Amino acid sequence: GENVEQHPSTLSVQEGDSAVIKCTYSDSASNYFPWYKQELGKRPQLIIDIRSNVGEKKDQRIAVTLNKTAKHFSLHITETQPEDSAVYFCAALRSNYKLTFGKGTLLTVNP
Amino acid sequence: DADVTQTPRNRITKTGKRIMLECSQTKGHDRMYWYRQDPGLGLRLIYYSFDVKDINKGEISDGYSVSRQAQAKFSLSLESAIPNQTALYFCATSDKGTSGNTDTQYFGPGTRLTVL
Figure 1 (cartoon, each protein chain N blue to C red):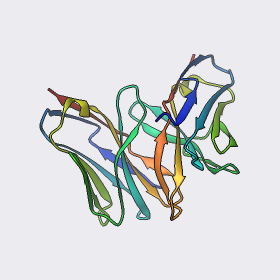
Figure 2: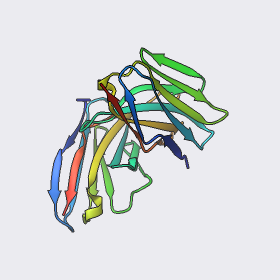
Figure 3: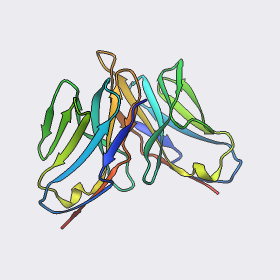
């Protein structure tokens, strides 16, 4: 089955700096890669996703890149703000199968 | 997301008791999931259902059972609760994409279960 590794497990940055979270996956048939943000005490919510036919996707301060050959994908947050502080999860999915999550990254943005 | 609801939101129970967690959705999605979240372990899939007649085990199904009563309802049961089942439980739903791919998952608010 699919295995998703996520690094780092914790990340602390200063407000305004960039943050990068990286994930690797094992199943070459995986074709959908979402990123979820979970604020303290709340449910995970999708912030951005990418499909295997695309190498990069941006949404304002958030971007995701995908390298299918190396089987890794990354979340990039620019100009971080305190409200970006949360746990971020990457995930990988193969068509008509189940989503496999990474173990999460606790991002802290210091004012 | 208000379209996915879970009851109860919090529950404290004792070892050996039977517990049922319920999930309802008004999104009209065919696919529903139960996850367990523990600190440092991420979200682990317990069971999933792609339609009313379809039930599949996830990676940690031992000690749990599920029932898909209708398209909108998916219940998780702990037949005899034990302390290491203390965790945060999330229900999620997703739609079947136009090409058959499972799309974005939408999570319920979670149920915090404590087994003493």
